[in-house]
Length: 330
Ligand code: HEM
Ligand SMILES: *[C@@H]1O[C@H](CO)[C@@H](O)[C@H](O)[C@H]1NC(C)=O
Image (cartoon, rainbow, N blue to C red; front, side):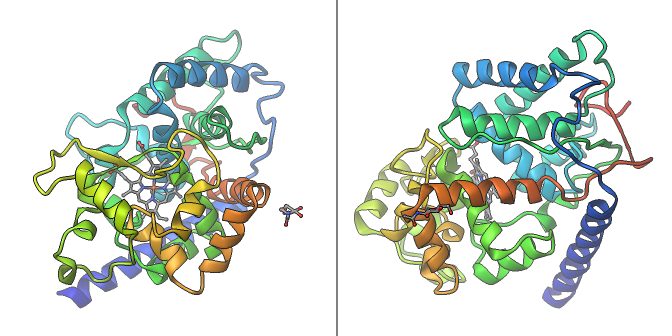
């Protein structure tokens, strides 16, 4: 059984990797893509997203995670935004079940605002709006500002079955993280930089609770955790925690996009095993040390890795369309 499951998983990863490569070869993404067709698109998205972040901070981390999950599942094609009346959409599966509804709403509002601009109806894809919004929340929370490549089409298909096979889990070790990211054309260096997104936002208790109580033996592995930090997490997530309880992914500055996430790892204050392993494993530690020591270096690596993330499985031909609304195919 386990063998068959592994094979199935390996096959899926291979298919996804192939789709990613095909997309990268044919995609013609570029900055300022809407410069003449809809010149106010980027400023409109930014102002809508900014309003929503002011109303609810959760929109910022929620949007960043939404973009990551979109790109890893079927490529950056806004398939994550599609809603199916029968519940077969990506947002009803595994890791995607905790995507932020506030972030989804902000993207839908941004799309509506762009559609309403004179001459812009039907021109700007949801996949691109998501890429713009992910860029905007980074700078809105104190991170770097950068130009974002655009020109993606929206996908026409989705199903939820694939989701649990193509997203990383909080218990992944370095080999598993590297294998999955490599299948998407991303290096270990990119993977560590992108994990820096955990500088904002939260994780629910179920994702790390086994790390902080004494049933370690049920874990495949458990990288070390600072004792004071462990005690504080036990307060946030008692053994009988409620499903809605959560902890900050960056205990020091949870609402600021900065490099303290990496500094936390140096003190064994990573919440998820997949965070802490980046410091614990000798192969990735030097990169964590460099990101912790030099925020400019981290920012540059993050921006470059986000561009690579945004090129995964891009649709530019008959396999795509510009949706009228992000929640449904045309
Ligand atoms: C390296 C492998 C990764 C793993 C194993 C992982 C896992 C997780 C988990 C388990 C959560 C908590 C979900 C919840 O309980 O609601 C989370 C949250 C988050 N992840 Fe990741 N993640 C990874 C990479 C990334 C990447 C590449 C990005 C974006 C570039 C990202 C952005 C986020 C953000 C912003 C949050 C907070 C969401 C919120 O507060 O709503 N993650 N991640
Ligand atoms: C920090 O990183 C930047 C960008 O790579 C580099 O130019 C700079 O020299 C680094 N600073 C230090 C103190 O190493």
